Image 1 (cartoon, rainbow, N blue to C red):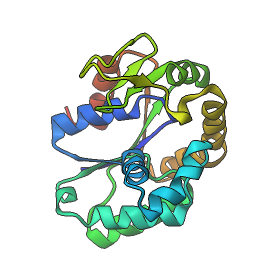
Image 2 (cartoon, rainbow, N blue to C red):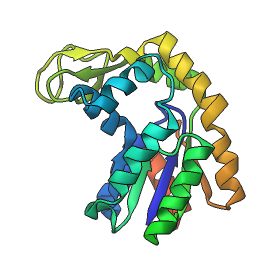
Image 3 (cartoon, rainbow, N blue to C red):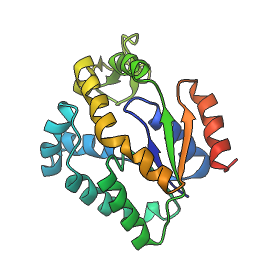
Image 4 (cartoon, rainbow, N blue to C red):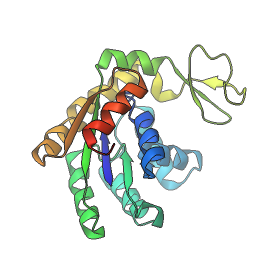
Length: 209
């Protein structure tokens, strides 16, 4: 099974991806994680991408598409993938269709986790991450609940950047909803509920209980 996750930054896509990966043994491919690792490793792609990420803008299609072509050819993707953060534009969606066609692995569904923007702003501006282990927590965590490390606010989680990211999503990424609706592959769930309740809805609507 091959699934694309859609939804604004902070909608809870990553949480649902983890649950689907655990239940159905899918390969979880998160472009955000791949890009952040590239930034941390100071690779040429990472250096170029950091400026876009820090300002809340999308990394250019050609950089992302090249990265994903390389990733989709790795053996762990053969049994099915959960794509989190890709595609983000219709151009990327067309490129993904071509990739999957070449690999003989059709896309089964595009899962939209729908959450109001004001709820997302509250979620992201209160989010904190551990410098040591990377665990995501909240402003209420004085220290990492996992390893006791220092919690900090990522540059892309301040309110100005969050609002810019949501504007970018609305203008450039939301058209994917119409793209996949036109292919009769769009599945929508209300993400403004507890993760377990959302997941029950996801499983029911994907028909993979």
